[in-house]
Length: 181
Image (cartoon, rainbow, N blue to C red; front, side, top):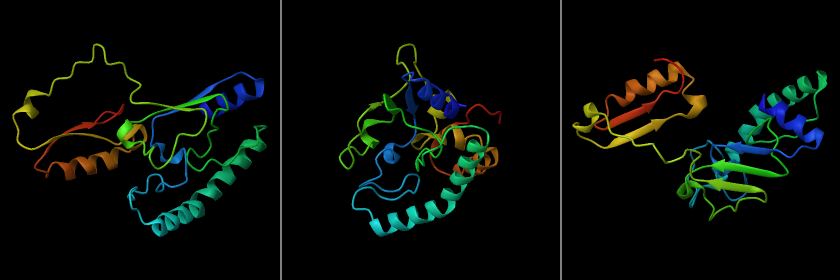
């Protein structure tokens, strides 16, 4: 739905803003490890980065081409390949992303023109959090764990991860997203 809204506004000449809250590594693809690859950013093995990128292209480029054809067959606009956000178009007016400053890798890659970063999209007022009493008394580090809006929708994956985490000496607060347990 976001895709069609962005393109409709763009074709009508209405300024619009693209926003995202996932890794900014995909915003600038030079001098950074592949998005979602788990590779080291500092002193990373660029040969491994290239292998990952090649495999990514092999798997996802045909999916994009199929989707592009599907959109065109239905009277939609020509799509530009966007490796990171796949089918979404960045705004020529302004783009924003939310990611903690310490993890933005801006020393390796500057933000492109028209991109603006925020540490959080959540207001801090009236957001007092207290550690649940059941967790406060237990030993180990307290870790907040989230798979984001897409990962947490995979209920089987989340159940598996929780079953693994329960054997850790640490305490976890697991964000389960909008799905029931």
